[in-house]
Length: 119
Image (cartoon, rainbow, N blue to C red; front, top):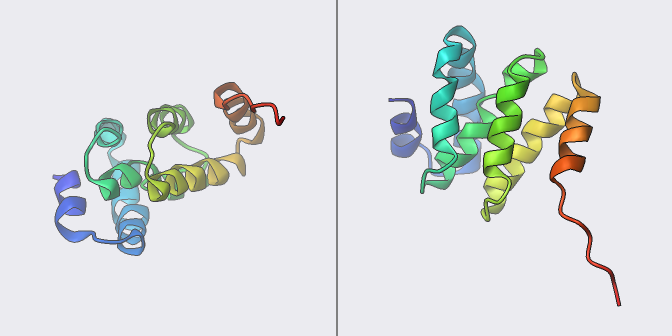
């Protein structure tokens, strides 16, 4: 049901973020067991559903909650080629770092690709 809301009603990043941040974010806070849906969304063909997997947790992460789930979702989206999905989980990590600076820094260092040498 949650994914259908995104699939049927969202056609741009602004409507994705508005729906996910407020309505879906509040829903996940009230029913944390439903966070498993977000993890499945990371594999969906629809870019807005994949972005929604991350941006739904923006408001909860500002409260300092769901950090392990946030890292799991960020890792699942790490190789996503869509720039708007990348910006969504980047925003999530940025917001998470405000309460969990060291943990987010360590996560990023652990998952960064090595820089190629310039010749």
